[in-house]
Image (cartoon, rainbow, N blue to C red; front, side, top):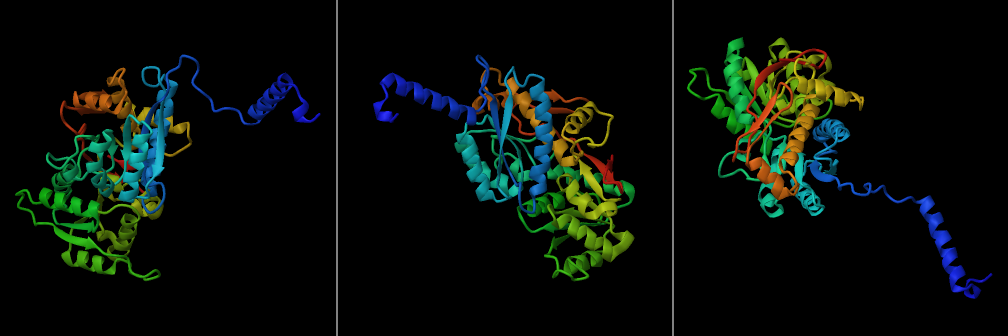
Length: 393
């Protein structure tokens, strides 16, 4: 029968049947149960593509695994927590745009941000967005010191300066006093070089370090990539190279230096350089590389924080790594900040909770943020890579 000849009641009935069929084909997105509280939202802008993609990907693996365990245990005061991830490709401008998008979506805090340049670009924007940052990869000193640090950024690990101070203190105890500082000519590398020069020049009486810029690799297929840089390093005759580089440049330089210098190629790297970015490229040649440790080894079972992390990660079939452990620890500290905020899980409420001070025992490893301060840990130790890619502290 033509529709125009149906009675209004019959037409309404037909439309309701059609709507029911459409809903069966395209079911509505699951909604919280009646009376349930909406999830608390966190946000991350990080590189998930490009040369630094491993950092975003590994932080996410650790954060997601430990968040799943926390939500299964009841979340934060009975509310689930969700994280929205946006890819910035390690581009500060994209990171700023992503941060504005995430803030507009009503997140309570940023977590696990990646990159010195990114955080430098974000610092002046955070005062406008008024959303706190909990946990960032960068250890640059100018992002932490009074006068240049944003009051919206809260760090969960020691600074690059403290890492270099640890190297300056510990390397001489194993006979390595003559140092070359090989640095990437970018915001990360230049900031690290400034901190390293200060750390290794603290009146020790030892030879001052030699600073050498990490040039571009030679043409593909060249037998001696980074030839100019390596020639400068070998001319300086250091007992150890402290490498201030991240991303694919780090393993590429180490491999070339090992080829050129043989057993004399002793290298120490910052904590943020470590992980699969080294082990996947260098394989067994990673053995003997030294690294600063800002958290316990992710392969150790002596501390409960690592056992809990390993148990959470095992459910995802992912392998432990320095970066995913850091992602987990940052996420867990963020969850405790949300709990401390009480009923006010807004950005302002989370910031107030952090500014009051927050101490969290994660299980044989404690993050302690003093009231009014920005850094929750100054833990450093020295680790050495084994041929299987694991680190012994």
